[in-house]
Length: 334
Image 1: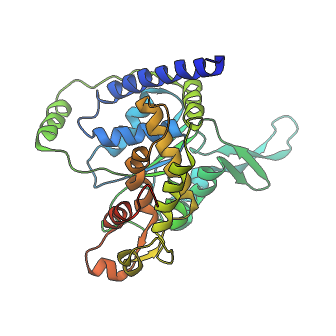
Image 2 (image 1 turned 30 degrees about the vertical axis):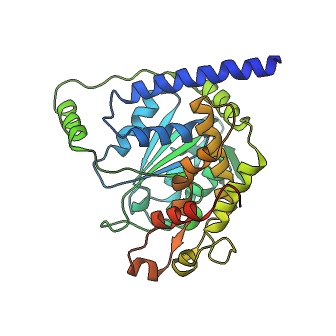
């Protein structure tokens, strides 16, 4: 075995241990929501952004705050409101006067986006103009203000929370914005037993104290390990066919998709299906990526990239049903 393979094997063992430690820390603050925690950790080790959707009160913000406490990384939170301006996110140039010479010059004042982990809280409570300010930061991981471009810290993640669009005071997220999120994570109501646990733990005098279990350097190492996971061309082809089948004009599309889908997922979906599958394989300690790993992330990757038409809404067909249709229609041997 080569030194490189031995190093990757040791790193894979560390990943399993660190994942277990991270989950243990998060469970000090979060009751239940195991699947949500798994998806958040997956986004972390893939080095990509995630969008958490659910009604208020389901601990979406608490989960990301707790993740920040369990990581030795800088953390900032932006509370999105209707009056929030783009410069409130990215930062702005201000005029500073030199007290000795009296000369004035522009100095860049960094916005809250300059952090390793950014919580974009209730991102759909602000108008599209301000939502769009996040696009460059999420894709290029940099900010342009005036004539200057400033690099963001590494690693850099955006975890955004979103309330259901039917709620008062919310705006539809533009397709270009939702496409920047690798995963769309649905946060549902807890079970009765979980809710009893939530009430018991949050109405007393003690507050959980979380300790950092991962450094920024370790996160970057694990991200490289995830991207180095081997994957066959057959698995890549399967992921591409899943994304392709979501497009109504595609030969892979079923009659249901042609009837109810307005726009399907773009090529970024294929990339994220494979990257997410690599992350699942690495976290599970599997030697390579399988078809099952792709299917395990299909809903989170595809659902927010499929846009249903008005007829679908009228007939009670949503994006979740479309993804199930795609998974049923596309086989590993196509």
